[in-house]
Length: 216
Image (cartoon, rainbow, N blue to C red):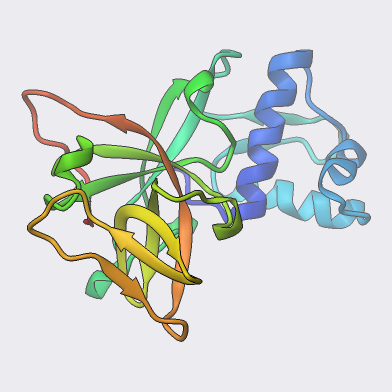
């Protein structure tokens, strides 16, 4: 199985896939550098070699366009979305080494190459139709881009959670969609990281999901 990628490697791989779908050949090293603002062709080459070493591409270093993508559906309408689990001691993470699986889906449902899946554990969002075991599709956004009532995935201290987001008098309030659970008022000094806005929900009926959940 290919090794997980870091963020820039993932973005370069997605660019290679999209470019190939549109042109039937790969971009040159200089084109890749221009796309990502990398001035050094050596640095681009090192990123490509890392992709090769991790089993995502085959590479002919003697050719500028000598790249072959491995183990990926190259249909123009399909994109690969990573699923993130939980690391040891219950600390959630979005590092590539913590990807548990990859799901291929119609790219019309994935707003960006950085979208990802989390799995729900718990019942605090039942009122929003989000149930224990569901997969939610998350689009990474900045907190400044959120609106009141958006369903978000956030990391608060050492916990990840999915809640409705509200900004009240400058204070972030994370509201559950179940009256049995209290809202979470985030203090100004508390470490809150917005992972993204929940934009999709997927539920498998009649079979248990084999994935690590994120609590709600």
